[in-house]
Length: 312
Image 1 (cartoon, helix red, strand yellow):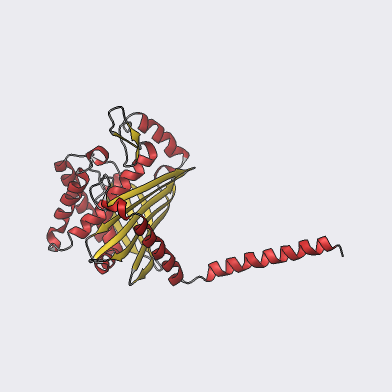
Image 2 (tube, one colour; image 1 turned 135 degrees about the vertical axis):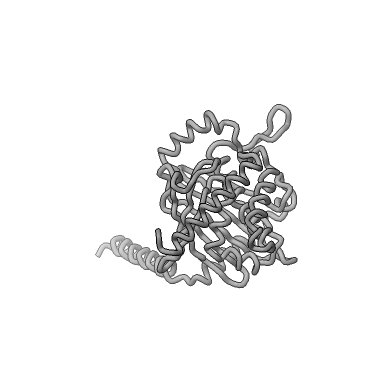
């Protein structure tokens, strides 16, 4: 037999065995190992960015990063909550609480949850900034799952196969780990794959109504030395991610109030937090936002009761 032929066959067998081993290892990797990797990565991110958390344009222990690659848009928001890890984890590992979190966003007109045999399903009712009844909105269903939950690390993922304008692979992630002093380091990320329909809509929007809308990433300075912020698609996803981050923070900040007063406190605090960044996040006057959200919350309660009684 030709020696070179024998060597080639041996290499093919070796490569096949290596590939098989990698696949088997990936398939049998324990959840503990995966969560440990996530915990280590998040802790490394915290250590590398301690200076950013102390000094940044937000004036809060908060910073973000975003990128756009091909059709994929992704943003990461990192911050510190002044609550013990156990408090954050016990609150946000409850799927129902996420509906009260995400519905603070002006475009989420309601949110409902239901338990499936092997998962939880959260339905977002998406619409315009102004008040809209649920029947006039677009519905996007997110699967909720707790990827990792242990003493020092929490990882939650909300994922949807499809979204508005034919977008795909929507994914919201929440991670948390404990810090000294009864604080918690948190990570909120959002990503999706764009579509031709959305790109056409964006082209028209960013050339007209959205022309002056910006995100938080500084791309340079103008002639007067003022910061120039990212616009377009990256600016839009940065704005939305920060809105969700402040929604989580507002939810946590109002948990100590009596249950009957939490909602009113929550919408007021969310508006106050976002009002600090008027250039990026202003959409509605305070009285309008509070009025719209009060009506939308009533709709959400009605929808959830209907699901609970089996009418949907």
